[in-house]
Image (cartoon, rainbow, N blue to C red; front, side, top):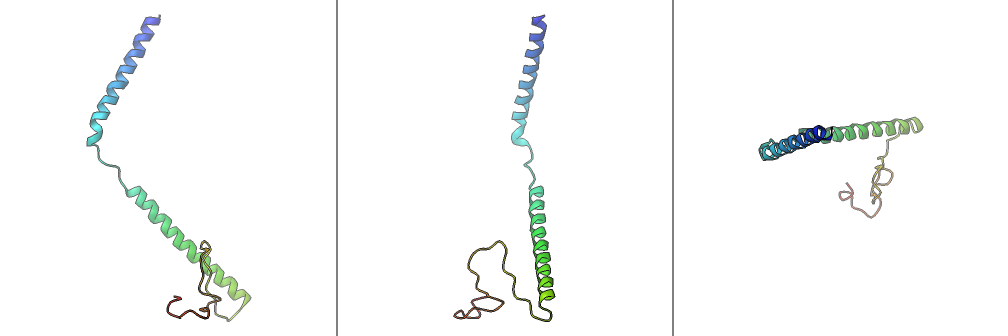
Length: 102
């Protein structure tokens, strides 16, 4: 009983090796993978961010107008940028030239 099972196992391993050898020989001639899905994902992520930023800014403006009707809305501070911020309350702080602050 052991002998037929052993023969089946050996045949299975041989066939797997033959398949692997065949695919290893074909591999250099295969077409390269496409970048289309990756580029599509990056484009979708970019435009999702653009739309999200526009919606966030519009909600900020509407909330400001509810609290201060008729006034000009100051610039919204960036949410994910913790660096120096040269515009304070919609105006250029004193000491900076107007054209450098923009």
